[in-house]
Amino acid sequence: VLHARLRRGAEGVRVEAVDPAGRPVVTVESLAFRPINQESLAGSPSSAARLLRMRWAPVPGLTADSVGDPAPEWVLVGGDAGDHADLASLNQALESGVAAPSMVVLSCPGASGASGASGALGADGGTYAGYEEPEADRAEAILVRLLTEVQAFLVSPHLADARLLVLTRGAVTTEAPAATVDPAMSAIWGMIRSAQTEHPDRFVLLDLDPRDTRAQDDILRALPPAAFLTAGLDQLATRDGEVVAPALAELDDTDRLRLPANGPWQLSTGSGGTLTELATIAHPRAAETLPPGTVRLSMRANGLNFRDVLIALGMYPGEATLGSEGSGVVTEIGPDVTGLTVGDRVMGLIPESFGDVVVADARTVAPIPEEWSFAEAASVPVAFLTARYALGDLAGLCAGERVLVHAGAGGVGMAAVQLARHLGAEVFATAHPSKWGVLRELGVAEDHVASSRDLGFRAAFLEVTGGAG
Image (cartoon, rainbow, N blue to C red; front, side, top):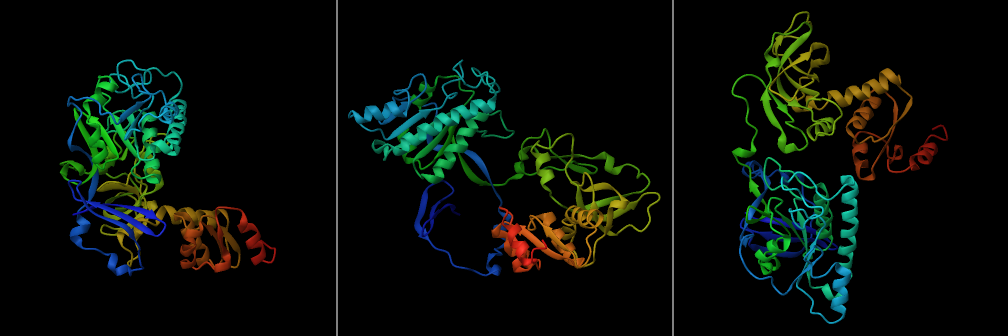
């Protein structure tokens, strides 16, 4: 078993692989790829079953509670106990002949400590003391300052062989359920992780435990700095006296959703905000007596829409439940329902469809074509009904007419292209150039395709239609 990192280069891809314990196994300076056939990508059933997730695990040999003296090659910049106020003053010292450090430790505003320091997390880990401005303004101010420091570090000839250890406090959550994090500190991790991809092996992130009330310099004194130079890790955190780092691990029973013991169930967003809060809950309404005009379905597949993602992330306005389309089998028919019978395979618009049993309006479901799978059927209703309403009910598109479908390679766009061609219309479409192949496969002519990223389609399509548009 190998865990590999791939980095794209000018002449191929650099590969670094380690074993599950993090020990280096192989480094490939440049790996060039050649085309392969689709069949060779199938893989084996055993490999497909081994799903992985990211966990924070203790780093062997590193502890946040050991006692020692700071190493001379470790220079602290910023913070109340910093050796230098900023990178500019450090560079001035280096210009005067001071020996260059092996590692520069940059303390970000808010990382100093939890005992009243400006910008630090409060003792409860949930408030941000010392800042009165809105969080977005605070994050922007910190990032602007950090960017200046990072750029000064990268251009310094004296620090060309040094690494920059960026200190935060409460920037990441290392456990489930998620603990409170400081949004500004999290933004720092986003910026430095981008810098890590642009300048490999130059940056290390260390997030201090927000529950650790010791001063920052006391925590640093307890950490063996030489270990950070040799451990080969670039994202670390101190939690409960341990130094932890993200690593891949196989899914276990604690990662799986548990179904209620009895009765129908439904997928819930929990308190909302992150995908880790998804949960299965009892859904007793699905077992109640059917009202007139409804059917009970045993669900087989669901269509996943962007709306569902927004709901799960707590970003959808108002109250909303997951699921809006799917497919299943009719298990019971309510009063006044005609045209459907128990055992029918159906698809349609089905609210609250993320569950095993649901109740749907009989008018919004229809039989599945015999040659379609449940998964194929679940992908059709929202996209194709939207396109059908637009082209038919609103536009009244007829054979021989021209129609321009913008974003034709998207879900609704592909449905609109297919329906318009079915109606006999001449179809023009735009999409990102990387998706033009999708439009060609849908039958759109080469000179009827243009980019959706600019207004060039106007002149192109005027020319094709002889100025008619």
